[in-house]
Amino acid sequence: MADIQFDNVDSILDEFRDLKDPRSHVNRRHLLGDLIVICIMAVVAGADGPNAIGTWAENNEDWLNKRLKLPHGIPSHDTIGRLLATLKPSAFQSCFESWIAKVSSLDDASDLNQIAIDGKVLRRSHDRRKGLGPLWLVSAWAVDRGISLGQLATDEKSNEITAIPELLDQIEIEDSVITIDAAGCQRKIAKKIIDGQGDYVLALKGNQGTLHDAVSEYITNHMENDFADISARKHTEKLKGHGREDEITYYQMPVPDDLANKKKWAGLKTIGIAIRQSESGSKSSTEVRYYIASIGMGVNRFARYVRGHWAIENTLHWCLDVTFREDENRVRNRTAADNLAWLKRFGLSLLKQQNDKHSIAMRRRVAGWNINYLAQVLGIPTV
Picture 1 (spheres, helix red, strand yellow):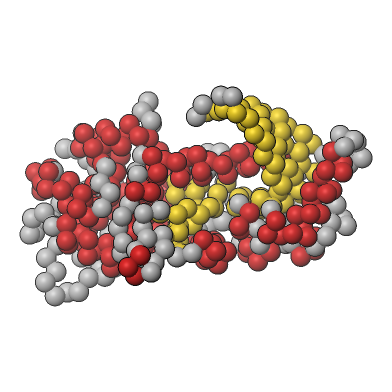
Picture 2 (cartoon, helix red, strand yellow; picture 1 turned 90 degrees about the vertical axis):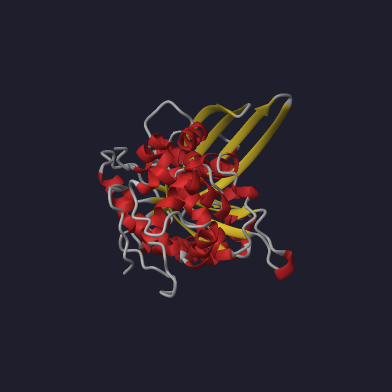
């Protein structure tokens, strides 16, 4: 176990006390705990790489000296870079799990249970000299709590299919509803969710040709007479945001007994469709998505899960790109890039737990301007 000492730091950072130190014992001058604290605080405050983390620490030396051991002073950016390049990203996640459990135990509502899983590319993380494309990350996002539950890195988008089951193994899915876009609409993934005592709502596209065609034909045929012959339910809602107005109509219905390949999908109970009509200035568009689900009938609940899945794009990915500038990350080392991505998701989760009037972007700015506010975000005593 690492000799981690946080001194006066009594907060979420305590969850990292048992983190194993991956560094060589030779010439090890800085405590792992000190480095972890500095990395987390600096990323929340606006740092985007080892150089920025080191610079942030240098500029907050007096404050850090009062709360951390720092036996050899402020670590250099090279020391931080070496740590990020050797520390296993999964180690961050395992330490984070106990904090997630504490947060979850404070929730009174039993229906706060949606986990959205989706992939995202770090566009500037490619390394042409080594023949490496950009890094893909598959993330699990607790929609209602605004917490990043985990992530897995892969070198190719096509590897999402193999990454999703691994990610499901790393998080608690019992009594949760897992929503995944069409790339994850696979029979093995559906079975894994059901075996883990969860439920699923999976987007359906051409990657499941026979099933997609059967669902779309069934829904289209019954739509012609307004679903008079089956027990379909309808829900319509209007949304506004980012200069766009959306009207979304949802239909949900029991899966027909004779649906093609029905028996191959574990737990399959219902199918549905979401028709999204968007207006943005003078432009308009229509998007149609089909779904299969293991949840029972309840169109409002179905609509909530479909809408909630879009939150991983609008809340997680958008915030990471705009507020944390993730797409501009140029760190080439795969492990370091993965760790920085996890730190940003960790930071975003922390910022979302703050109960104040600021937006996420403003909270991060204030954390960069006011170290006492930053300490509050991480639960560190300011005196």
